[in-house]
Length: 341
Image 1 (tube, one colour):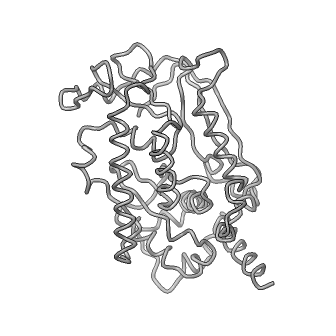
Image 2 (cartoon, helix red, strand yellow):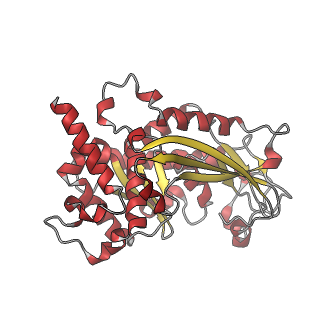
């Protein structure tokens, strides 16, 4: 009976923090013993806070292992400090046991990611073992008249992602072994040489982190991505792509039927993620890449907790279906659109 009461209290706390009308009244975050710093003031706006907290819930539920922060948040250092404060809150930790696994990743000033380090490393093991077969790598270089699949020549991309995975594991193990308090963030600029950050095509890293089944790469003026030497590539080649003017299938993963319709006032709150793939990649009319089909299956299984039914620690995960009743995939063909990567 006590366990049920605790679960009910935790759920009510989470719902309050997701409520546009109620979240500012939640003292454990906004009126605690520590003064709520003015540098965090964007989180007093319902859009920023609720999107941020909803992303944390998606990660704690292991529906996703990493998300791109595409809404207003504080500067990097202040954002890290804010996440540290959330993670140090005992009440929140009881409600969200996976909160301890939530971290921030910095790629550049415009690319911040929230991750669940545990589930991301678990996914990296799967990807390493199956040689990244869950992803379709698509070369969008202007050198080609239209996007082409480059899965036959992937040494560059695989080695790059293997280096990133090694850094993720090193960071996670180092924080665990040292029991450090600074375990809420990872700045990839500190590993610039290992990742060759000055020369790589960022959508490869961000695409894998977000688990997009279609990852865009760019061979520049070279015929094969695996032969690329970015030191000899015109930067203009990497800033542009051949996606403009072709038909794309835009995929949006959406949450449906929230516990409280007020949350729908928050812009884009329903969207779990969105990505595109070129229609010319379809091997048959109305056919879809296997990677996309399998991705949809994985996401829906996670949402329905199919992967956790036999997990002895399932009680440690919140039931996301208490907050959103359903998840769906919408698909829309778009044309003559300029896509900046």
